[in-house]
Length: 333
Image (cartoon, rainbow, N blue to C red; front, side):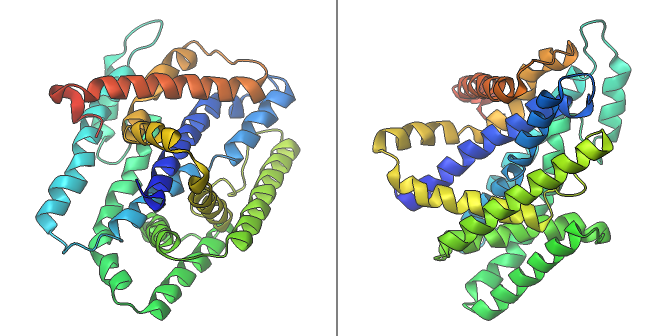
């Protein structure tokens, strides 16, 4: 396997771990005063250090789909790309609507009905919100492919610079209205392609990423302490320039570090990477007992990473198991 391909596999794995961490720490954020402040601040800090995960998944999509040199086939694209994700999303949405009705005390089927009724516009479970802004991005692929193939770097750079400017404006509180998610998330497709295809100033991007991470952590933590309640004042958004810089740093770090990974570990990471979407879809099942029993583990700085890794492994095993049978393999594409 070529290193330039392997780093994509590596990115999928680390991004999947980071997403699980965000969901593991979720309950900690909103119980300030009920747990030791060190645990509360640890959760906020880990959250800030993980916000790059969702943007990286979108950047991977841009890197691969916009680099595809084959003639664009609408039928192939819909069948093998869009529907491959959309159909499992629908089925898992129904599954989680049912799971949402089940608690340790009783079963409330009206909750399932309500969530399924709202399904066209609202996720049935917290992690499925990702698909509501990810799936529409497929509409941009046929539009952006001619842009990257025109061999007009000035135009490409201008579009990318305009997008970065909008991300700066979003951090400053500017609302772009109904096109915000499509435009700001869509820009990550171009960014992923640019970082994948071009030589980039590694040292500069690393410096800017670290600076953005420090600023993000400091602002969110200091503002939360001052308010006495969790607040990110916009710095934990996926659509702001600080998150763009952090995601860029992670992307180029994995691209650079992939050269140092042994062939043995490349094979292992690649096997796990193939189940990254399955891991994403499955992992809340293993968090359900903790959330339903309101268990908040102490020593959050250690508990959150440990629970994250345990849930990651269990989700991988489950996804790998489902993939072995044709009847269920399509659920974990």
